Structure formats: C-alpha cells, structure tokens
Length: 159
Image (tube, rainbow, N blue to C red; front, side, top):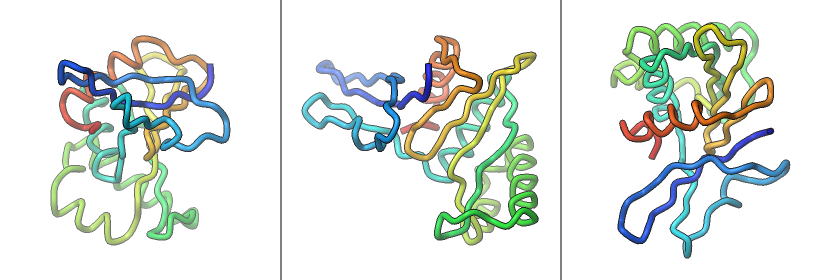
C-alpha cells in the first residue's frame, strides 16, 4: 500500500466522517473532492499540522521531523531547516506550538508543509502533508493509523 488521501465526507444525516482512500501517483489533493458526494480534502496549513502533531503526541506518537519551507515554499538551507525543525519539535512537545506568540513568530519566517510521526516501539513512520496526503513508511497504512487520525479529527485538528 502506498500513499493515502484524507477525505471528509458529509453524510445525508448531516454527520461527517474522515476516511483515507488510496492515492494514485501524480494526483493532486483536489482530484479527490466531489461536491455532489459531499467530499472534500482537509486543508492543513501550518497551524493545523502543528495541532495534528500535538494531538498525535498526546496519543503516544512521537513527531520525528517537520518539513519546513520558506514563504515561497522553497527548501531552506540546511542550517535554517535544522534550526526551525528543532524549534518546532520543541514547541510541539511543550504544547506551545499553538500559542499565538509562537505562531506569529513562526509564520513570519517559514511554512510547515508536513510532519512525520512514529508510533512507540515501532519502526514505522507516517508523514502527513498540507493537502491531506498521508504516506506510511515503510509501506502499510493500517486501521490503527486511521483510528488515531479520526481521533485527532474529532478534536478539531483536521477540518
């Protein structure tokens, strides 16, 4: 199994559900939206991804890395990338990543485009990106991942 795409579907009874569907190489997140079916892709900006990281840490995951870019979404030099990665990981672990003062300083400098998490005592990693793309590494997206992402979604970190 390869990459998955997170999708939120509005049901006829007004309830909503979060699912992960197989993603085809070369597709864009918006390729998975369908207004008639009430399906949209979650838009995960910097603040959303940080909230996802905090929520997953609360569920026992460890955020192992953060993919940060400059304001034009270009790669940072290695020194800047290391600096911001360290700052953001520290903020997630200290639960200050959602603090307005921290966010204000962050968003003036960089954009978070993804984060990688690992389950405790597991070699498997899960990378979550801005457009709701989820990439398990090595391959293998199981029901535990989806259940945990649904828990995060219920807390409002994924819209």
